[in-house]
Length: 107
Image 1 (cartoon, one colour):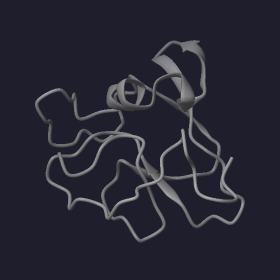
Image 2: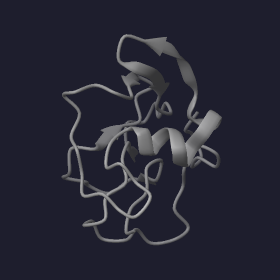
Image 3: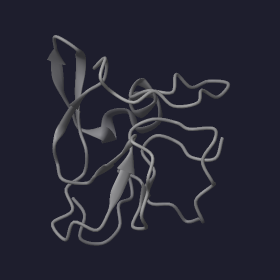
Image 4: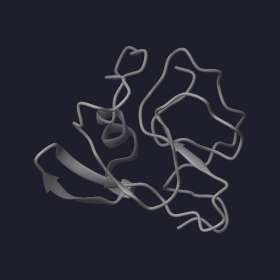
């Protein structure tokens, strides 16, 4: 799978599952979320974020649309994080940061 939920990038990403690392909450089962190309184990939506990142993804609790997950906070506004697996994207160059080991300056 080229990109996995929870991977971070500081380069421009055009696909809609990439969101800014701005500390905002996102509902996992939101019907308005972008659905991406599924892989073998993936759902192609934010459920992948829960599976890949687990408790390091800062779950905030349950709401009417499932778990609320908080993306990391980047005060410099240069990093983005993917909220779903996508089997059609280009693989990122390792080492790829993620919430368990974020880049410097990202909480």
